[in-house]
Length: 277
Length: 277
Image 1 (tube, rainbow over the protein chains, first blue to last red):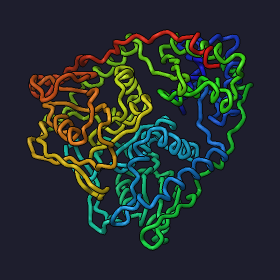
Image 2 (image 1 turned 120 degrees about the vertical axis):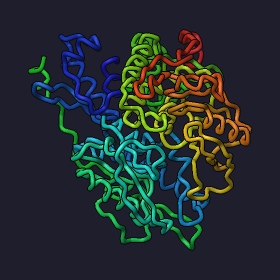
Image 3 (image 1 turned 90 degrees about the horizontal axis):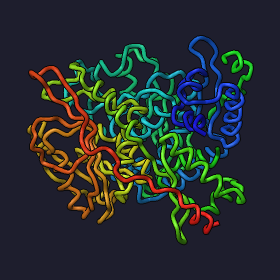
């Protein structure tokens, strides 16, 4: 059980078989058997799967997984939660603070993003303060990568910052977003995660900002998008739900787009495990 | 293993033994034995412990735990990370964005807060945007309670908001913090979690704001405090590290205060378990 809980606590991190033996006290004789048992149990419960990584820096790595049935159940629950007319705020905004402040909800939503972008090779998650942060941190945890938060203002100097102006589709106002150079090395492969997408002005601003860092954008994910406007400033994004306002007051919510992980988890390679022992 | 991973994924949530049997497919005959084995393994690895909750709404609940040796090792690592003169920013601020954007680091730090405040009976975690959010979300996850984020500005109306003015000790400027009424029911027991404490102006402002919500403050926790000023506007807080600036440039960091959980985890009650089956 100690071995299994280590994997659950350290998603996407490669651990060598010798470290599993020395640091976690796993019995060397039964190590490949133990790993196979954990892999089977993880897959059976729809929690995730183990990967054997060959070579000098190789070992075993835990990936989160979301079975389609689990994902659909969560999306249905999300749509029900969203279809509450009390969520509609003045200016076409949506009240999401209760959901984004619920750690268990955030964890489930971010598992879907993590499974969806598992093979994207991202080295960092980028988000815009404030409400995207909980989702981004949780996606970063499941993918084993750091999170970089783009700020609205320059409250405190963090050294050289890059800033871009953008028009928030919701307010129509010109705003500024900033990111300190030291927070994101040039050429980093990134995922963009945010809570809400309407016109795409903020997301477009983030893409403009990231170009200044030569970032390689591997994926965009938002919790909720709006049906209107249909023409958004970004394409090829993942959303978990899409909302429609009816008569400017009532809400209806449908499942979003492209959120199911398409890559099946490859089977555990026992031969590769045995070579490493 | 399925049982164990459920507990790890749902800290502080009471699950009835019948739900363990029906939803998770645990064998009823060996249920109390299985739970005792998991409890032993959790304690042995310093991960946590299981509690039996008696009564109609009773069941079993997983609490996170941090052994003193693990805590000390983490605090030492934190002090080493903090004692980097490059962290010193103009105006006496500290560069912490790399640490607060590292999900694994945040998870370890927040486990210490969660273990420390495990018995505080808090119903919500309150934090101030932006940098406190990752820590607060993770503490909320481990304590199974929601997180409420206090905002600097009223970007979007979330209905009636309460605001207070406060003087940030760092900038000396008068600022405003706001919280929507609907986010925090009156009389809620709360924990305050933030990243940085200097004079305590922000924390004092949060306490003033929370008084308007009749909140019952059960604890204050900050990642890093500064040695100067020694007289802070708040007392009785937990900090993980304390930094001193020497000659205005170099940094030294010592362990903070009061961060070790003092309540020993009570042993699992097998008789209570058997009564519930």
